[in-house]
Amino acid sequence: MKRRIGVFLGFIGVILGLLAIFKIVVDTEIAIGFITISFGILAVIWTVMALQSLSEGSSLKRHTFNFLLCLIFILFFSIWHTLEKLFSWRTSINELMLYPGYLLIALAFLLFVGTAWQILTLGREFGFKKQASYIGRVIKEKEKNRKIEKKEEKLKIK
Image (tube, rainbow, N blue to C red):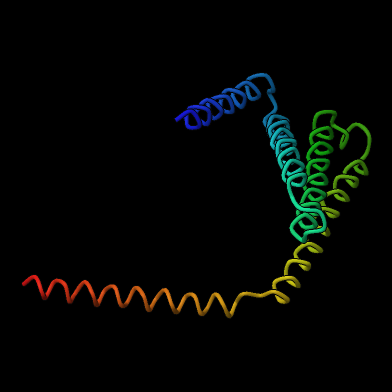
C-alpha cells in the first residue's frame, strides 16, 4: 500500500514538474529539451545503480555498461541540441554548430549496433530457441489435456 502511495505521489510530482517547466519555459522545444535531459539523467543514474549491482565480468554487466555509454551519448546530444536551440547557435554563430550533435547521436547508434551484435552473438552461442520451442509444445499439450479433462468432468456431472 505504501508503495502505491509513493508511486502515486511520484506521478503527481512528475506531472507538476512538467507543468512548471512548460509554464516557466515559453519555447516548447526548449521545454521538451529540459524534460528530455531530466529523464536522461534519471536513466543514467538508474543504469549506474544497476551496473553496480551486477556481477563482475558478467556479459549482462558488459551489455549494461554499453547501454550506459549509449545513454550518455544520447544525453549529451539532448544537452547539445537544447543549448543550440536556447542560444540560437544555428543563426547566431554558424550551421557548423549542429555537427557535434550529429556526431554524438551517431556514436550512440554505433554503440547500439555493436551491443546488438554482441547480444546476437551471445544469443546464437547460448540460444534457447530449441528449448523455447520444446517448452511451447509442452505448454500447448498441457492446455489441450486440461481442456479434455474439463470436458470429461462436464460429461460426468450430466
